Length: 325
Image (cartoon, rainbow, N blue to C red; front, top):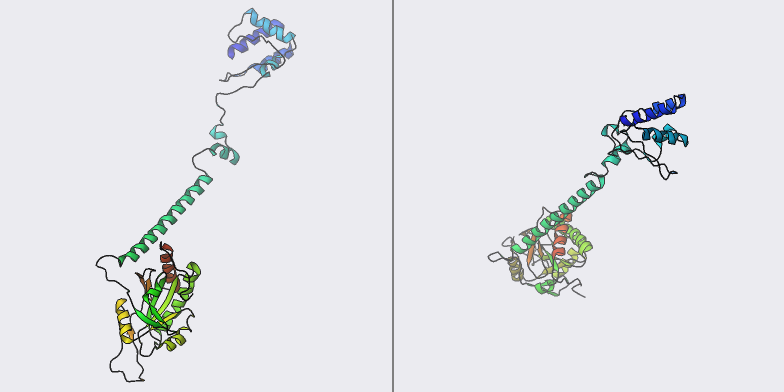
């Protein structure tokens, strides 16, 4: 570029020292820069180029010819295309606005969209593995009593319901059953547990439909006749099933379910007494196998969730029709 300035200075001396021409030359005296410049006048088909490293007569003649044709030295400096630098990216110290910073970092590896997708994917994976772990735990609990050497809970029985009709373990087939052992003269524990059983049953029914039978088996068959059970259970829920029978049948049923109960000996007729018994809800699956025992430490909501989860995990057929239909 310095040689070009010397060439143009020589051309100006040949043309004559006019003040206008001298000012035009001073504008062209700029420090050398590493740029690639293109001079391409739009209305000239052929333009002589000023040789940057030559001070010979052809260079002077070219400059004289351009001036005679009406081209000023300023137009020689700015004509045609534009100066293009080796890089088009802005220097880091020139980024002064947020728009410039965002434009520079827009193509980076981190962005708001990427962060949202990362968090969403992590949340979905956590929820999936948590659900699968809970499901496998329930499955393991349900299969614990089916292994060899495990004590079996539940079995065949033949009793009478609160309407005087025969009810056996076959009437439980095709549905889950929630079995509770108690007696109608219980002062506090049995009423509390039956209230909780009613809440559990409604919540499970709302979530899973008609898939479970709420059953109470008396431990005091001497006083809990079918009519007594019917009057007692309707205070808690109209769909409760009450079962009673002969003492030996009740004793055998309690043995099948591993339920402890005892009545005081030498009770006189008409004398009031209490019956000691186990306090659990026994959840049985549609095939009559024991699933899980729900104790007093469970709230109604917690117990209903446990039961509903087991029902939803069941792969076999479920009889959702009412047993009397």
